[in-house]
Image 1 (cartoon, rainbow, N blue to C red):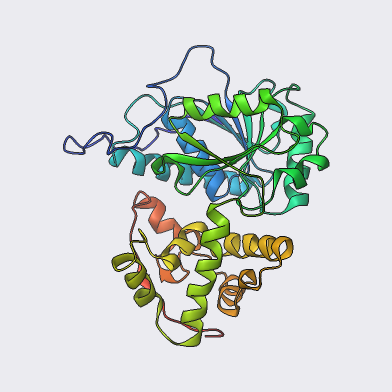
Image 2 (image 1 turned 180 degrees about the vertical axis):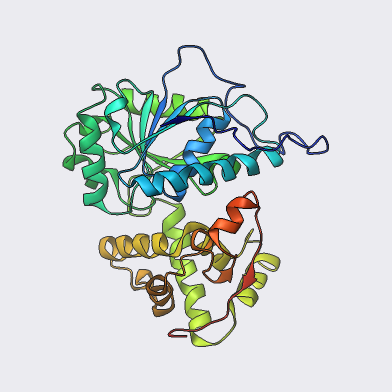
Length: 332
């Protein structure tokens, strides 16, 4: 299902500043350049695809759920529209192709896996693609918490595996947390470094451990913030205002939870709890209740804040509406 991601994108207003301090990829498509293969058309898969497209790199976005792929086109357009309006996507875009299996990707520049935060799910997706792409193709896992040393032995080509934790939204965040596992080859790590340079992103290498740096610090803090709301000490808006205005957290932990996706956050916390034994990482009842209710954050239209329906936000261009705060407690 090939398509042009520029469909329905508005022209960039003349008064929008360019750059804004964020780097981007090369100025447009490079003749003969191989595409990027992205596995998973969820929030991060669509965001990573949009980042590549914004730099002129063509993308094959794969997800076994055909309905999810249909929705993914609108999600990618929303990411690109935001990037255009903020002046970080100003050149020709790459071409987006979608498919329910990766068989059409014979020689991608790299594979980026962005599926559910679960070892078996990630191993299954990466093992399946190994039957299609040549040996030596970097297999990049966008895990937020699973060590490469744990995932690699489950793959037929463990030396090709390397970690890259993109943050949401990828088009707007200039650095990427990268992880070289104990089995990662020099060629795979060099391939990831070259890909990030092509995307205009700065790699920050960290050690291979549960949660790496960002999730190990951020996710327990968000869990604690949710516990404060759960206890009735403060509502979400008050927690975020204090963390933002007094302690310098850019968005506040609970608005950040909505951006991450509360279901993704719970998955990551469980990984951390199982692998570190840290009781702070046990997902609190309020987070679990929101997942059970389908209140997953921005992607569902409601989390700690109310953002309206995903369909309306897609029609409106995916604008970063800050949302009305939701102070509900467990079970309400």
